[in-house]
Image (cartoon, rainbow, N blue to C red; front, top):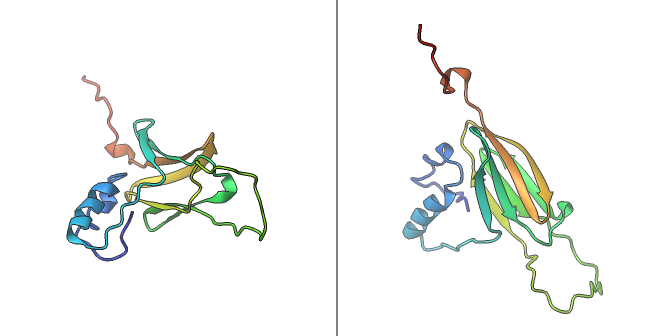
Length: 144
């Protein structure tokens, strides 16, 4: 969860990917309005030297039920509510799979680019790539 108010931790956020929870925990110690957000669960997976995937478990959600936005170094994944028609009955006798409204935000570093998103088998994958200039990439130097 990203806070919109000024915080001493906001200066550190552009240099991290996926460590928002650490900063949020620090902020919660200093704030009395803390409300923990733990839905949907997510993983951050390193898929290459400079690529990452943010995986969110979204069982029961379709492509039309989710919005993925990126602006001002903040990646936002949220549910899009569809108003139910009056008298609409979907035939569900017991609802154990949560399809509640959510909004999950991630602060993305300045040198990370969002490449795309894919929803497959209830798992949303948002692909990220760290853009590293050629001069800063590791390389081997030939000895003469």
